[in-house]
Image (cartoon, rainbow, N blue to C red; front, side):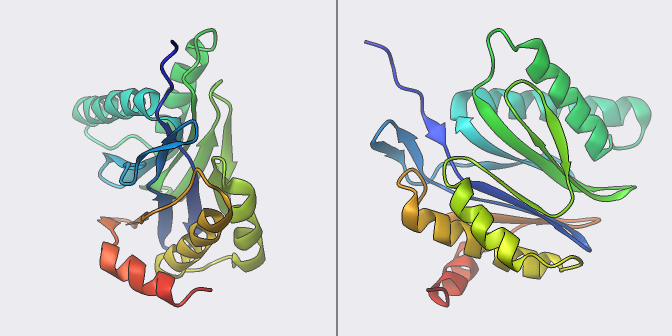
Amino acid sequence: MEQEILKGTTTVGVVCSDGIVLASERRATMGHFIASRDAKKVYKIGDTVGLTIAGSVGDAQQIVRYMTVESKLYEMRRKEPVTIKGMTTMLSNILNSNRYYPYSVQLLIGGVDKNGPALYSLDAMGGMIEETNAVSTGSGSPIAYGVLEDNYVKGMTVDEGAELAIRALHNAMKRDSASGDAISVVKITTDKFVRMDEGEVKEYRKTLN
């Protein structure tokens, strides 16, 4: 009997004037079975760099470990952090080199470097796209995009971006059975990588329909 793969689903990234917001819901599924209500899908891979996962949790966790080590090695050798674009290119090459046995993932990588805020999406084959507004991945992304495209405003702050990300995920969770339970939100600015308090997220969700 083939073992079903533990999967992650809806994630959101928002480009803001002062940083990047990355967010996800926390449900993981195996087919129609809810395997976890507290799956981690937003990871820190650098001081001001984050990565979100949608797809196979095992594949994504291996990528997170690799990228965390590589970013630290780069900083030790070059005495400066790798840029977001540089890290994304590295990750794109890893995914592309495994295209015959691909990682089953959709990824968002974003943060702030010497060039300012940056956000990229990557597919399982290593295709990378620079996102300039807001982006979503996973099974609930069509619903999330409806909220993002209606409400995104150029130049919004990370606080405003966090509220938008929560609203998009909140609506995706209403209609997508593979998305649900709690929401994780990370706000990345020039010198900070901050996870929003879970209570604060819950309070904001209470104001939503």
